Length: 119
Image (cartoon, rainbow, N blue to C red):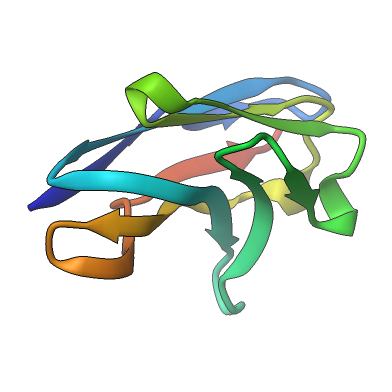
């Protein structure tokens, strides 16, 4: 059993900041990539940012320069620092962890955390 627990979402005004956290626990052998996705109402889920175990990062064009992803490999935790937030960043943010688990190689998802950017 593997669980991803997210925290840090909430309501923030445009231009504000939030920091999301996601901790993976359970029958983990090794995590190769952790990432954040988001899904706004009526839209498909999209990749926001990802980070490999060696620290290589990838960002969606819409968040480059505003969001920063980081991780703590020892704690199987990933963070997303979100600055200069815009109303269009409003969505449910999901954590994803791809790697090797006792059940095999696969990806797990968190339950999602709501981020609302509004004045």
